[in-house]
Length: 588
Image: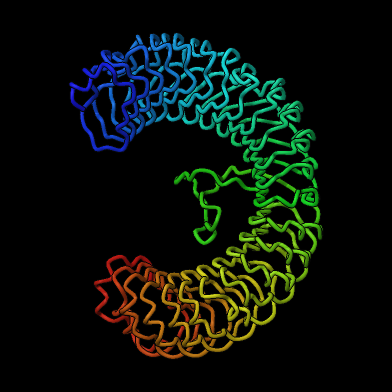
């Protein structure tokens, strides 16, 4: 931007946004500038140009550049400035106390910079201030008394603030949005929080807030989003929460609560997350949820950030719960039975009730959950048969029913053409395994081990997206079908502890992505096919079968192999000499 631009004494509006510029800005003190927009320009000069703006300036937008330096002390002289938007630059230093002199300021955005220090008390003198965004700065301390401002939108998320939550008690009645998540704020929620009748969003996730949720929260008539999760909040969820008719999102995950949940039928809830809270009430609260509910998560376990030193996650169970479980995980103990009313929640997309103490049968009314995408009922005490109506939920993508006490056969799922994940292991199912043929080509993971499924494996070649299948510990008979060669994405294949017979089909050689194979404890016979093409194979368990022939196949294994178990078979010769290339082999 040429220095000569500063000689334009009549210049009132300068708009250069989304240009490809470099350097800084000239001295504008000789102009009549009222509006300056140099956003998204790539400018990398010093922010000192703010010192040379004329007193006539009303609006400055310089977001998404690379301005450096610190905010000048004389910024307080810009008494007519209404909007100062400097988001996402490389500005450093502290916010000057002289900012309190910017009497007309309505919008201040300083987020995503390298600004440090405290938020000056003088910020509370800005009577016209409506929007304050400091997100992703490097601040300390607390926030000032905002009662003298006109604040509507406050965003101090990801700032490192470690002061008290008492600033909430000083917010003006005009406030609509508060986002202070991912800080270290302490103290408790003030009793007068119910006076904020225009507040729509209160996001305090991941702080160090303690105490109980005040019953006065029922006075926040406009509240739509309440996120208090990952704090030290204790006590019960107050009944007054059910009075929030506009409430759409309630997130209380990883608190230390007790009791049950209030009647939420009078709300507009779309998302409810009370995972890892210690709640121990009756699951009947589900009957009181509004039909607007779309996401519901009330599992026992909280899945927080992965700690590699203590991670206990089974990789095959990483679906949807995408993080890892700390070993000291505690959680909910909801009990009772699912009522038939659950079928009326026709907007529900995610139903996550894993790891509670829910018992009884799964009601057939579940067939009414037409929008359901994710069903997770694992680690409960469900009994009886899974209703056939599960097969009409055509939006389902994930079904997790693991570790329950079901009985009978598993339903056919011909209409579930979006299904990707099916985990029904350790569920006490029996009956024919023919339901496998009803699964769609979209499948990615099938875990049905530790049941009593019987019959022969059906044609499975259409499951070309499956990377993980475990059918071990069942009562399967017959051959491994040649159609297995169509499962070209397969990485983990487990058919152990069944009564399978016949030879390993040669088509297995075409599954070049295989990492793990377990055929142990079956009645398989014949020679082992050439597995040379399986260049990613790491584990191969063939123990306790009736294989015979030469061990020459060992010399054809990939150098990636580190575990081979072929114990208790009828191989006819000794180890081949050509296995020195198996440098990673640990167990043979």
